[in-house]
Image (cartoon, rainbow, N blue to C red; front, side, top):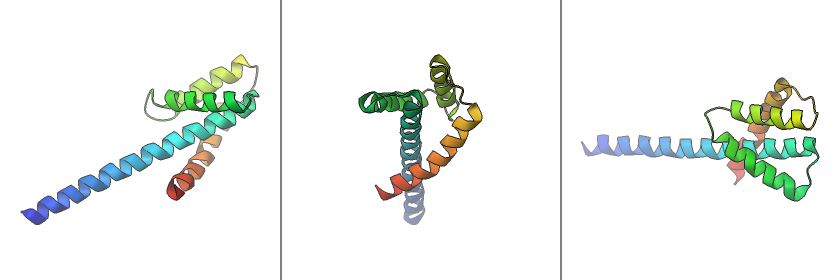
Length: 106
C-alpha cells in the first residue's frame, strides 16, 4: 500500500501546487487590471499602486471576476467615464495571459 499512499500524496501535492499557482495568477491579474483602471481614472503612481492593491482585495470577495467588474464600473461611473463591461472583461482576458507569463517567469 505504500506505493498507493505515495501516489495519493503526489496527487495532493500537485493539486496544492496548481491551486497556489492559480491563486497567484488571478492575484496578479487583479493587480494588473487595477493598474490599468488607475490609468483610466488618471491616478498618479502612488495612488495607482494603492488602487491596484485595493482591487486585489476586491477580487477576494467572491469567486470569479464579476466583483472586479462591478467595482471598476462603479469607480468609472463616479468619474464620469463610460467604459463598458465588455471592455473591462476583454482587458481582464488579455491581462490573464500576461499574468500567466509573469507568474511563470517569477
